[in-house]
Image (tube, rainbow, N blue to C red; front, side, top):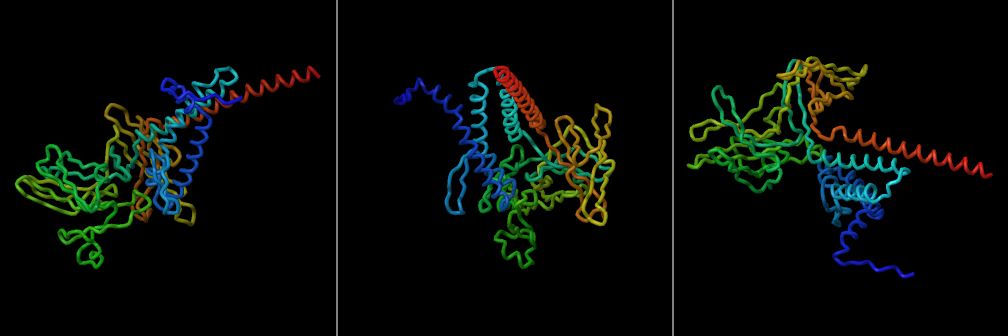
Amino acid sequence: MPKSKIDWSPANWPRLLFRFFSSYGLAAVVLVFLTIITLFGTYYQVDNGLIAAKRKYFTSWFLIHEFFGKFPVPLPGGLLLMLILFINMTIGAVIKVRKRWRGIGLLISHFGMLMLLAGGFVTFAFATDGNMTLYQGMKSSQVQSYRKWQIEVRPVIGENKAEKAWVIPSEALEKLDPNEGKTYDLPDLPFDVRVSQYYKNANAVPTSAPVSANAPGKEIDGFKLLQQELFTEAERNIPGCVAEFVGEDGEKAETILWGYSSKFLPDEKPMPFIFEMGGNKYAALITKKTWSVPFEVQLDKFIFEKHPGTQMARNFESRVTRMESDQPEKKVEIKMNEPMRYAGFTFFQESYGPPNAPIEEMFSQFAVAENPADQWPLWALVITGIGLAIHFVISLMEYSKKSRSNRAKS
């Protein structure tokens, strides 16, 4: 029999789209592309780091992959593929599928898989992460980003204390071309801030050093900014830039802002550039983005144990006190595989320092994550497992029933 012709009239488009997005063929193509970009992204990570690979292959809508470094080929990004897979499973496995009691287990399993996909998107769109570093006896509510840097300008009041900051955010700095500058007119700031020579990884070198001959930028106060190769681990990059502060009357101040002048150890204080503009004193600094959690954490004791005869850590954990203004203090143990979860935040025991520990006083470093979908993967796997167990039991019952029927007939 000849195949019936497809009705391509506009009135039939909704049905065609429904059939296309619910097809097994589309699911198979998406899974093939997911395998391909996972392979390419894994190889890309080796030379360019996890963050760059994640941004290019796994959280993008489209990408250009260069085969053998010469042949550019457009590919769908991970975000687009996961969205299509979510739509395909929703329509094909939940809406379109025939609702029978025999298939209830698989239906439940598909809900678990959809929850897993949705959790990945929520994490991508809304999760934040950073770290908090404390010496024993210190307390803090401040979390510092791993790799997001921003420029802060603060007015300096009595005793050289700075008030609230005007901020040029990391999203703006990351878009800057090192060879081009940009002027920022920040609201209520009585002068403009011009940023040029922004390098994502840089070193401030004295002009007396021979290596300064490789720095093409201007000399400021005996220093020049030298661009460095990017580390594959993005958090190791220390940015720098030339910053000019220009008032309406032509008053001007300029400096090299370098990330290494920011705080890296808990007891270190940042070294901002202090200048005067319009008779008032200001401080400028390029520093990692920080934000607050709604409670304080105090490190009461840090426990560090080594493998006998080696410098390798066998165990490190922290005894902390969680403090809130309207709640009683809470003693908590944070271990490598036992995080503290509270108020939507998760504190993991991440690391310790300094590098030559335990010769010097040690500090404890916590990875701090705020993720609305933190527990979604766990519940998704539980739901999927329950669905598969139900499907197995139903299949076993049908098999047993059929076997008994066959034996009775024989």
